[in-house]
Image 1 (cartoon, rainbow, N blue to C red):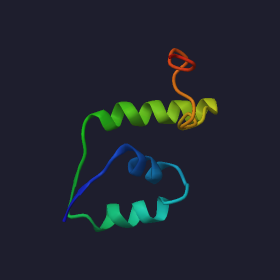
Image 2: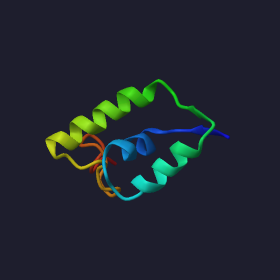
Image 3: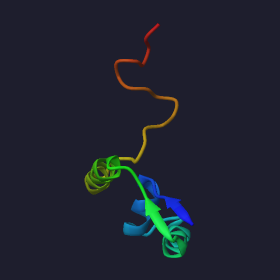
Image 4: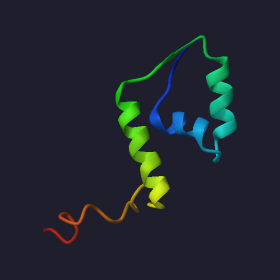
Length: 71
């Protein structure tokens, strides 16, 4: 089976979190793994943010500072 691996599933292989065991099972059972080159950039950014203690994603109710309160 060809399995597409996105950044979040790749990170679950590196960081023990909810879904890590499932990600490992999917990884191990795939015949072929594919992804995009962007996974490297996204992964490095997510790991750097985690190292800084930043949240993985901003709350959905808040947009970027330039958008908040815009009409």
